[in-house]
Image (cartoon, rainbow, N blue to C red; front, side, top):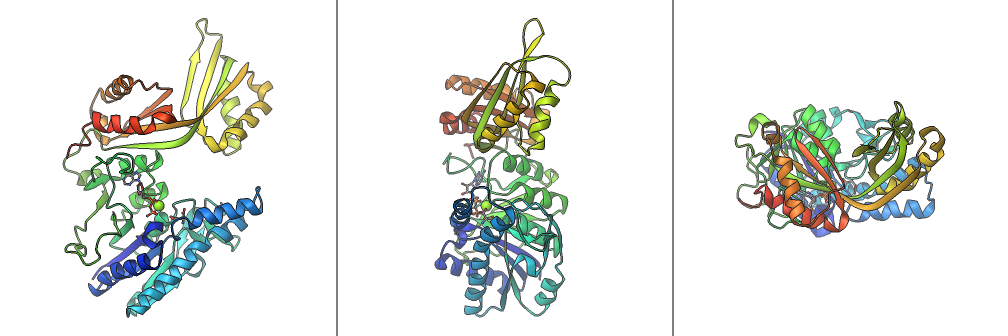
Length: 417
Ligand code: ADP
Ligand code: ASP
Ligand code: MG
């Protein structure tokens, strides 16, 4: 007997037929004798609808009321799945974040889980009960519902798995694992049997939305054995209940990966914008004068490029922010114009950041050069580059996103099995 957390995303619970299908996946594990906690997302599209309603009600919405509204989608699916399970003879009970409780910090809309009391769930496992938990939500220190940021049910699942010391956390979604790139963009993408935590962390933070970044961090820190697998597979197909090697992708320590490729995957993030400040004085303190106020306004700055003029007196500073933050960033910078001392400010939206990821890069030279060459051959202009030990990120015009992803995917041989 083992203890398992099973998480089902929006498309997996999109309607009653899908919810009944989820119930069959749960029944398989219950029949195998396991203790099961299920975490559910809202039906697909529901959270977007709820978010839009809050904007319609009040553009400058109060984040606590935003949370009260957007957390409701998961309340519905948790209750429906508990009913569907009861209907096939399984003892199941739904749980909202506040009932467990899943305690979070006060950052409404993007809260972090601080503590989960799993004792009541564990006591009820002893009575043969399955817990069906609403993902994406917890209880803030102000005693109000707090949501965990978009895609947050993944994080709920991994955090609960850590809290109840589950043997495994299965993230069921609409793809059968983590692929070398988004299979919706590149049909030749290959499913990975395993991916290292560090790589998955980069993939997620650079745009692959298959797992929320925070869920990967928690899995890494608390050593939660996490699989990504499909809810669309027949729940009773052979091998589906294999305890040690279920179908899907295992997120694991790099030591567990025997054949490490140089490049593991390609990720992309849309809706990036670039801001350039022209003809700044090249003196100490100028970067602080720019990025300090942006940070204070909670604007996430990413790729930064600085050019110095030939005589060294002037500099241009170019950096990226999410498109949604451009107007706010321009206002902040214009408000500090006297302190920063720039000549003109320019901006461009609709850019895409494409990233090449792999821990094998640490020990291989020339990985970046191959990417630049391949993009040049396709006539794709590079606007900015950043690198780390295990990733290269390249900023390009949004129109070339798919071409760039496919080009890089093939350059590193990821489409060959
Ligand atoms: P859920 O609703 O189950 O949480 P998401 O839509 O959040 O599902 O995440 C699954 C989606 O992630 C897939 O449909 C796929 O298009 C996308 N995706 C992006 N990059 C990858 C990747 N490298 N591997 C698998 N899926 C990816
Ligand atoms: N329903 C939430 C969202 O759409 C959380 C999740 O699906 O993980 O962001
Ligand atoms: Mg998701």
